[in-house]
Image (cartoon, rainbow over all chains, first blue to last red; front, side, top):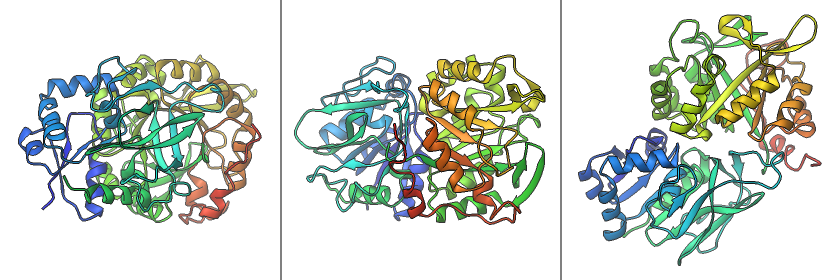
Length: 208
Length: 257
């Protein structure tokens, strides 16, 4: 039986994710208990909010070491959504606190050259240029099926071996990174209708 | 951006979905959860749910109703109505809303917008600015719950909200509300050209062409409407509807700039 734990660190919209998973027939646990992280087969780090405030909460909740143990030692599939993805990088300009540092990348404020045309935050449905080796985007025609984005900060480039898919908003940013068992999506798959459901299903098909 | 968002606005008076005309007359639309469920079937881009009596009744939107709507809504949705504290926002977001809409509190205490953005991130905070034209034709920011006009002009208030960290601004025309004869284009043009945050147009849409016209001619990022998606025409026969995918494709590559 697949144990899916959505991390509760006070900054996520876990309810939407729980419901999206339930639509796929998957029961998940929204928890801040270390036992639920230690026993999870899949971890989801949700995120709606402020990076600095979220990293502080994560640290204060003492979940960070359990999270790192599960993701980096046990190497279970771990998905970061929106702010959750940004927390996996090394740093963020939002609040200035270091991130988890699992992926060699930095989160920066979106600063378009043309601010009249490209408003910030980047909110709405946008298309992705799929990396052919992506597992999360498998079976999704990302050029015609957009995903829902809602963010003011983004990742310009992610180093390391693995799949990277980009979206364009004045310039290119990372929409999806996949680094072994560590994955991040800038958009909200739980609110992106069919392509989102497909992505979550692809995630849940992964094994250690 | 691939194309602008076309947003359905659902007004609630506590328990019933309603639609207003010029912020006065109300038409009952029935069960809000059912309305949301119908919008799900139409694959609505985004939903804004506003409890228009909340501030007056000194409460927020009923959390039990919100929980039911959150369980139903497959699309991104924002919630407003009587939200006054950081705890209110935390509760609403934890129930599954992507964003909150602040209206009265933003006008009464702009600093609160800064506090909310710092705690929850700008992209979680939408401010709704209601604009009314006076008898003499001048435009002012209307604070409906106190039935008075603010001293700051709409442009000044809009700039202030952006400065405080609001992620998006809904610019709602009180005069055009429910009239279905078109948006207040001059107002939307001025505000959307000035701000760097997304502006959402609201108030007056009666046909999809109204949305296309405003999108082509201004810098708005999204077109919102209550009437257009809950009435079948200007006779206001209730019929939940939404543009088809072909109709939405009309918004792609429409802008010259």
